[in-house]
Image 1 (cartoon, rainbow, N blue to C red):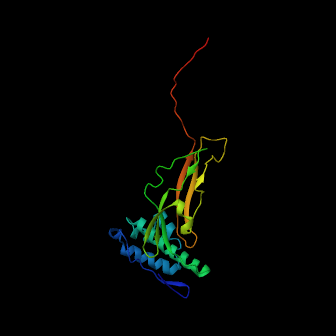
Image 2: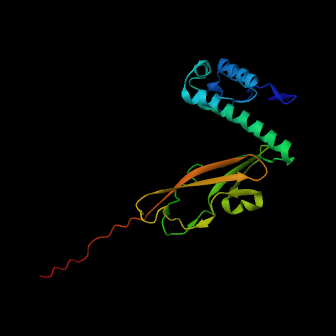
Image 3: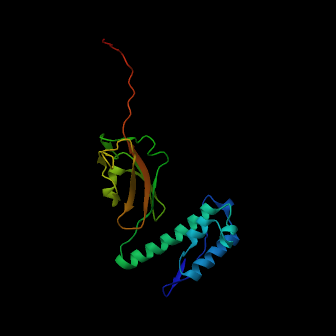
Length: 201
């Protein structure tokens, strides 16, 4: 992306990663023109979400890739604005949860949860990748929206049968990099077999 005198003068998708087969030259050209004309992503997220219009038609079959392109442009603009404001170097490019990293994490009301060993992957601006656990967040300059150890409780203690949603968000203090996963807490249900029935008359 090229910016001159505070205005976007050029933007081009040069690398598709693993999505080369989803390349839509006409669609991306239209998106690039839109971004330049609107000096930002404007209503592109809405256009793709509403599945309507010339731009959407041109990227049909590659809408996830197109959303990724829009997200990358927006992230670049946000990073640039942040750097202009605070001058802090941004070393982290992205944060991601490993596949199935939360699969075995079951939250029950009244029982302590320990997130310390949940793994995430940190990708740096130089392309280096590092696997860490949430217990290492502080030394890496990262923050977590939840305490690493806490006891989940229902939002209303009169209704233990309702599930409660928690947002586990990891963010970098010095950049715009962040990622989040939803986790859910509920009451523990225990099934017991009757071992003895005593009837008195």
